[in-house]
Length: 391
Image (cartoon, rainbow, N blue to C red; front, side):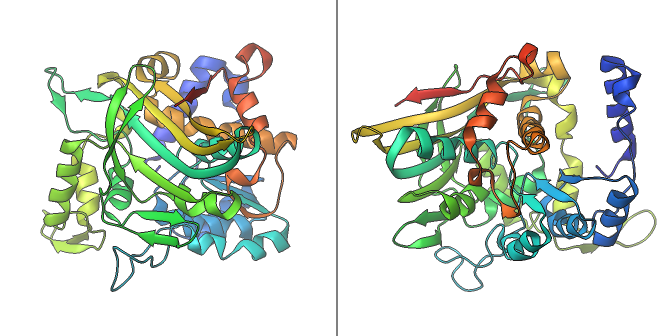
């Protein structure tokens, strides 16, 4: 986070909840994440064995490079950014999400270091679910379709529902307005129009039917590298209002991340329109007390089961904002995302997961992850049940 005091506040929260002996294991430091040499210096100074990247995707490459320079392993929850095809953005891919990181696979492998990329909730848990389906549920897969939906609402102090994205608007704009990518076995990766192919998906645990549309997301660029499927998609339940706001931002060029010159009290300054939008909206880290509802992340898998008969399942995890706020003082989208790299780091620490190179979660056995996730806290697990719904 660019605000060091927030990191310091988190340590104070740990101290209050778990005592000084636990809090003393955490240190707040200032890092210029745009400079690999600074990331490397800080990692070396603290003797870090793993560098966990949880900031905006525009810093992926510099933190990624800094980690290997420090001789550390690396984890992130979003991959290197894409660039649309210069002349055919809605039919052909340009630079794809993760291309710059996957290009460094041999370098990481030769160094004996692991870059575990895309280990948030989506990508991350969704990829783990996909690997589990391949290994344990299906003999042949027609489609791996990540489907994300929620019934979340945020209210102002007067009780009126407001527009307030539950995670980084910078990232939201990036993934929702870029051309979505689809993968098919006979065609490879190709793109389509933003918000295309709408479908209504019925989400579990009371969320209900939500219209989902194509959105650019890492799963589509990751799963085909390791998992056999005829088609891989990602669809997100955005809602008409959210889509309308995003389209308006695009029409006004407020989605641009190219700095423009504007007036200020201290004279002309350069700032990107997207950063202005992010600054004007409520901070996702602060909206939890004003948020209600649940969010669901999962993978819809179709194909043939192990018995050779047609099968269709939805593997999922639901996060309830009331519970995450009560237990962790964190809103449910942020909490659900953060859970997965913590589980992954434990698996890496124990040796249950190991490897070298640039690898996604689906490159590893899913069962240790899901078992640890669901095991009761009293048994050393995380107490988070995941669901399998036959469709």
